[in-house]
Image 1 (cartoon, one colour):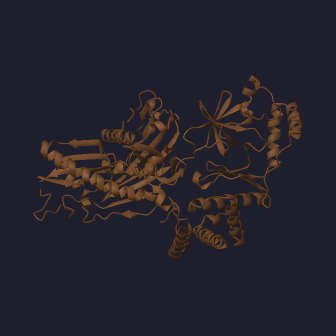
Image 2 (cartoon, helix red, strand yellow):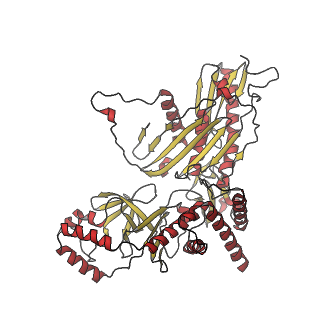
Image 3 (cartoon, chains in turn red, brown):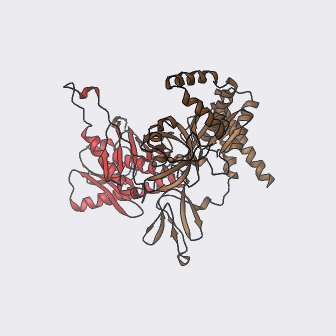
Length: 260
Length: 331
């Protein structure tokens, strides 16, 4: 399949190094301590942060837990993996030592998935944490890049993502200029990988300037990025929704993952 | 939407939208421009003069020899100290704050109280006055009877005593502190309550009490006369004579007899709704503004439930803009 046409345009009309339209909004969940909606093209993620709050315990036994009625359905592997990635990324940026004996719950829900959900989740969570007034080293931003038709492509959508090429997701601390997340499926030659990662990092930095603008002055104005919004591949949208829960308690090194 | 309209889904029609927008713009233009360039976001570097020496306060950290903000907020400087005041965060206790909280756990010799802080606060049995008003050592019996003072889920009012090794401690060594009954507790963002001399208010015209807790928990309840120690002692003595079962029935009867009159209940809800409207608009909640909002609603002959409608919300915003303009002109 041709992902980049001879004119150098992608399926949705973007240039290879062009981001999708970014839209972010703070304070979407009234009850939460901090919340944000983050959109990249058709990918839309909502994040809510509760805390830092007292660590409370909850134990419940479901109706299927006795006898041999039913086995407990486990969270699917994809969500487990993504929430682990999210937790590690966020733990790296939150200054947990300032909030001993408390926990921060971050709930991220993907409302629309059109590729790059992982990066969108990180960006949304990062904004929500800033909104909640939780001290952080930096605003983590994340962006993905891929390699198709021997062209490095920035910010893959669902069609490009599922084309089977390499998909590199990078999360960086823009100010510290450090990488906190680097994931890749499929293989790439080293020199090409460097190019792709460079592209993803550039994408992260572009997103970082947008996010800073959003969090600056905490004004609840919808910031529409300058990146042009062009064609939408309606077929590529799949609805995908799941809650991720993250718990951290730095004082007793007690970290726990809870999936509902 | 503008600042202060966080997470609210008011269904405004077109004219209301325009009016609200105009009022908020007016408010924005009135707000002081002094600190507008001092606001920072996460990882912004804060310009400081190193020659004078710098003390890094809350919300800052050091990176490559620069002072860097770790929260979004406003930079504040006090002599050498540089800190960032977060725009939106959970409640941060200060010694002497008057707070309203909810009992979560009754633990040995202490209650644990949820106060919207990152940890639960602790109220020791020994740091509150006993109901009989006598100063004495707390005995094991007192400890067993702790639930007769506060139970789980009771709403109480107390003062921040300070930080001890095991967390934040509260105290309630006065008649004005203690259990809050017959009213409602509202939760608003803590940054909307400013620290003032007075946090207890008795609205005589309505016969209600209003407690503006610094932690963003607000109590609106029926007015209770501060009871005399001597009187209370007598009541307690007679109470002790009655057996437990009798007391239960008596308290039920008592409740029935002393149900709050309808008028008081209405003004109680009116005041509570005024606080709700102000907090959705993101205005600082002070006693003056609350009273003004209540008066506005009653002068318009609005029902209590109509106060939460979009029209009243817009009216309050316009009124506030008007008030601040007048204040500015006076100065």
